[in-house]
Length: 314
Image (cartoon, rainbow, N blue to C red):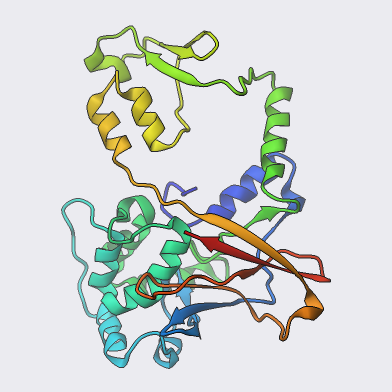
C-alpha cells in the first residue's frame, strides 16, 4: 500500500487497519535487536550503511566507510549537494531520477536492492511519481536529496521521519488474522458479501464515450445473477480490471492490461535455535539486480526456541 503523499508507510496503514479491526496489540515488526541489513556485493555480504532516511544516504561518514560504493561513486554521490534541482516535464523512472541525483553506482548498489525488495520490479521502469514522489519534492524544495532529508530529520525532533520506519508489520499468527477480522467486521455491519462470485461483464446505460463518468449507475453480470450498483470499486489486478472495462473504455483497458507484474514466492524454514552455528545479527539481506545470485533466507518472527528463516524467491 502507498500513502497519498508517496511516503513508504506500509507499516502505518497496516497499523491503522489493525487498530480499526481490534488487532492493534497483535501487530509486531522486525526484531529491534537485529537492526543490521546486508547487501550482497561481489559475492560478499556488506552491511547497509547507517543514515538512510527515506532511502536517501545522509550519513557521510558511514558512506565513506562503506564498501558498497567505490571512491569514484562516493565522489559522484557528493555532487548531489552541488547540483541544482531540475524541473522535469512529466514523469521519469525511479532509476533515472536517483542516477541523475546520486549516480548510477549508488542507485545500483544502495537504492535499487531496497526498492526491489518493496516493489519486486525494475526501477528503470517504475514511475517516480507513483512510487516515491516525495523524492522529487525534496529536489525541487531543497535542491539536494541529502539536504532535504537532513532538514526533515532535524524538523522531526527525534520522531520517525517519513519513509524511515520499518515497513514490516504482521499479526501474531499471520496476515490471515486481518482478513478474518475484516470479514467479521463487515458481517457485523450488515454488508452483503458475495463469496465465490465472479463478475463477467460490467454495463453502463450511458453511451460508451461517457460510460465511466455518467453517474447513471451500473449493471454487473455475475456468474450467478445480475447486480445493480450506484458505484463500483475495482480492487482487482490491473489485467483483470482491463478485461472488465474493455466494453466501456478500450484505451483505459489497454493501458491496464499492459502493466507488467512480477511474481514472487515466500518460503519459510524453521530450525531449532541451538542448531545454528552462530547467532543471527540482522534481519536479512537484499541482492542487487546486477549480482548473479539467489537469495538466502532472512530471519523471521519466531518463538525463543526456534529460528524461522523466510526467503523471497522470484
